[in-house]
Image (cartoon, rainbow, N blue to C red; front, side, top):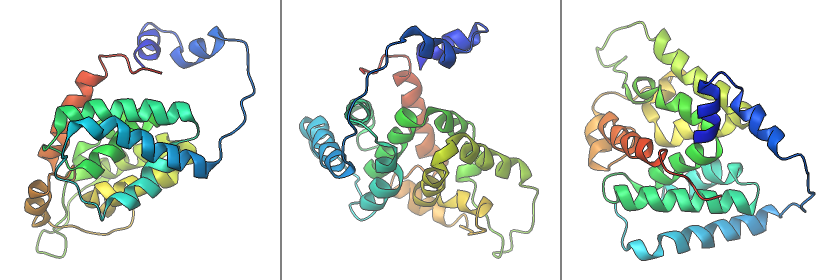
Length: 220
């Protein structure tokens, strides 16, 4: 990601340039999804095993985040390894500050869907601004917020369903812009107590840590 961005900043299409470096293609048999799921679980467990108790962790929410956000992006053992390495570093850095299932969901987007993650980084307001419509909050122009959400979904490309699931599972306030499901400001206290990224302060903690992580190489 760093090399690609550096080339792009220099006026070169970084992604296309890197794809041209290696001309040899090797056909590798696809790994069955059931095998990938098993390996994902084992590799992630191993990566986090020596960190100790990781709280807060909502074990009820995690299966949905895994099934709808993380696993649909995993297509190879290379994806599994890259994701586990990235998750390990971020979990170690933010243990206790960000709810684990939220963190693991966002790490999948950061590593395996980087264009959508970049759009997400610019959409903090859209993802965390609550709506008190129906609670006496009145109407306001939120077209700029909706545009931020639309950008995330657009950048997700073929993984639009993953982007929508991410908003549904991690950013309830953002649902206002895709299905008119409203969460009032009274939810903010709950989200911050649970250390969920749905709260802007918790999301800021995660984003600050991953900015530092992006300055380091992720083993391939």
